[in-house]
Length: 430
Image (cartoon, rainbow, N blue to C red; front, side, top):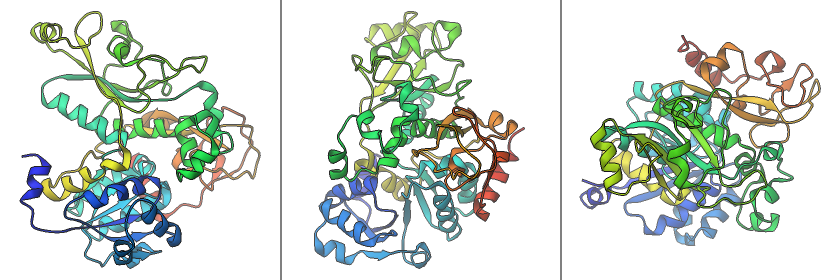
């Protein structure tokens, strides 16, 4: 039975709490009046006035907002009757700490915070299992939607050759900063401000940090491989996905069979390509025998030249507008909408510019560093510094532009939870 049908037979009330109330959660709030049996119990945010304003701007009336318990500290909410916490701060360090506290207090958690999930997700996922609660990706974000396609394909007997998403990428965007983001992203600063879009967060989409994070999350949830030297962002339209996103040994572009990849919606001249997938997700699946190959042709499926590989895509993701799927899945089916199961991938740190001793790094989407997707084995072996640990890290040596940054290059004020999580995951590498 599907979730909407199950919901009709559910007599309870689902109490939820948000940790952070930015753009993603505002999109959920815009759907709230149409959602059944969900109750916003608490919103936790450092700026409560802005959180209340976001609620009102998203369409909640004053009576609803007045019933919400607004807090500035998570600790004050842990004893409340809350079924699911949604962590949406976007800060990997704080987010990991929040997740640890929620899980240890026997509460379910949805991680909108993909940054924390990539940094410490295997530890957090295992911690949730130990505490008999659910740790879930957020439906609406691309990793969860990609996992949905992967799960569908594998369940039905297909081999998943590649999976990923589209974005607007150009090599020059890797050096984008919060000061230059909107021109690269494709809107004015006035439009962005009016929409409540954080320049540092949205710069992470532009410079490739978020793409690397999201593909790391997919690799860590699905056991797909990472490309040899980071994402390559080929400019490919949807009707060419099956021809190109297959192994090099089969005439494609991929280093491996069963890997992740992100494709660009623009070409080398920054012009839009036909049939782009900027906002969507895809998988490439392989027929396991000749009969299935014939079925692909007989029923008009888009394939590569051999006819054995077919592509399936979803043109859009609806971000926070479809977050309710995760909430209902946890309560009605006791299932996550994607979760970390492996430690396959890290996002390592690369200097955006020449950096000096004493410089303070500023994390994802900032001015100083950018991320690159690597296998966790390579990351651990080379002692590379994960991007999620860079916010506030202080350089101990000079680093040149485009140089990979290592743990030995920085001073880090370790938080106990993060140190425990990273040690746990490091010990999984064989």
